[in-house]
Every structure is written in C-alpha cells, then in structure tokens.
Amino acid sequence: MRKVLSGGNAPQGHWVGDGFPVRSLFSHMGGANENTPFLMLDYAGPEEFQPTTRPRGVGVHPHKGFETVTIVYQGEVEHGDSTGRGGVIREGDVQWMTAAKGILHKEFHSDDFTRKGGMLEMVQLWVNLPAADKSAEAGYQAITDADIPSVDLAEGAGRVRVIAGSFGGKAGPARTFTAMEVWDTRLKAGKTVHFAPEEGHNVIVVVLDGKVTLNGSHRLEGAAQARLSRDGGGFTVEAETDAKLLILAGAPIDEPVAAYGPFVMNTEAEIRQAITDFNSGCFGQL
Ligand code: MN
Image (cartoon, rainbow, N blue to C red):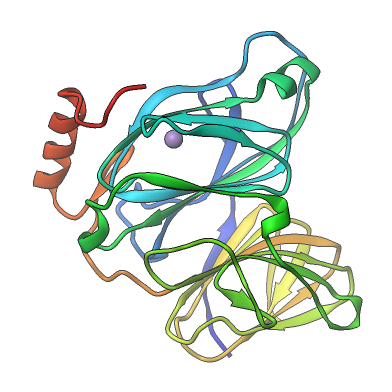
C-alpha cells in the first residue's frame, strides 16, 4: 500500500476578492513543491450569500505558467478572459483554464446567482505546467456536468466522477499536458473503497466533507488533506460518515518552481520577465 506521508486540516480561511471565502488545503506559496504537479487547492465555502444586485468576486487579474481548474459544487461562477471567451460555470461543471504564456481573467458570481443568492461551494486547483509548456497558447476547456462520466462503486459504496485520467474503465474529458487523475468522489457511511492511481504519481486525498480513515489508520475530518507516497500500489478509504473527496494523482514535474502571486515559472528571472510583460500589456486586453 502507499504510505501516508503527511496530512492535516485546513488552516484559517481568507477571502479571495469579496466572492470567495476560501480555505487553502495546500499551497506552493511557502516554497514547497511536494504535491507536484499540483500547486495549490483552495476550497471556497460552503457559504450562503444573500441576494444582491452587484456581483461579488475578483476583478481582472493575470495568470501565467500553469493551469487553474475550477470545480463548482453549488452556486454559479462567471468567467471572462483576454482570449475573448467566457461563460458560466454551474453546479457539476468544471472549467480547466490554461494560463500558460499569459492570460487576464475575472471571476464573479453569475448575475443569476447574485440576484437569487444561495449556497456557494467550489474548488480552485492550480496545476503546474512543465517548462516546455509554459509558453503554450492560453485557453480553456468548458467541461459541463454532462461531459463528466460517473462510475458507481461496488456494493453501493458511492461513485466517482472522472474529471481527468481514468477510473473504472471510463476516461475523463479534461485534456492535460501531463498525466493525471482528478476524481470527484462520494462515499457512503460505513463503506471501504480501494483506489489505485497510476504508479509513480503523487497522490493527494482531499476530504472536503465527512470523516474518513486512510489505510485503516490515518483519520481525516474535512476539510483536510493527506499526501501519499508515489509508489506502493493502492490505498483504502474507509468512510465513517458520508464523505465528499477529491482524489488527485499526477506525474511529478521535477523542475524548480519560482512563484510570485499569480505567476508560476522556473526561475526568478522568468518571474521578473512575467511582471514586465504583464505591465507592458503582453497578456492582452480585457
Ligand atoms: Mn484567477
């Protein structure tokens, strides 16, 4: 079995703009790259918003050198970017945005959600790109709920929605630059399930809600995460309560990481160049 190497609960939350009360389950920003290719995971909500007229969120800002993956569980988020594209990400939808050589975008609650109010719950995951792909064209994949195959687990133990990679013979719709699995997982109380991501992949088990035990010994209560060894076969998750998990596994990108806010490059010189490029309008217009 894979070893549980580290893990813990989410620290105190903070707000991203005025729309997203997040807890960072893990982050590269302290200098660590142990979860490679995954950089950061922010869990927003669940939080109830009262109806209002002005959409809450984050105004125009840049990203460069990686991808942002937005998974909406409740509520609606509207996106617009400098490639001229935009859209509303609804419950069950996933937006896989490739910032790569540089993008400007804005992220707000949708007009409809703003007017009606309600529960907002979403994840934003940052996925690194290899040096060779950091200058790829910017773009995004709008993946709807209906595009994502769902695999029922044996004995009514729950189900896995396959966002990326494959599970139970079904392939997820996300196109990725490096090999990875992103599994939106629900488990039923009392059930134990064995998972076997690709050997050699870093594995991060994110418990958004519920109480589970990994490998019969490592207890997690959401919101929490644990990092597992790259090798050793599979691992088990025993659900004490109904649980909502995001299982992440990916081929490590063993390259240096230089990060500054919304830029993730390989060297400090590249970060300085990214800031210069952004300030001189190279990321386009929005
Ligand atoms: Mn952003």
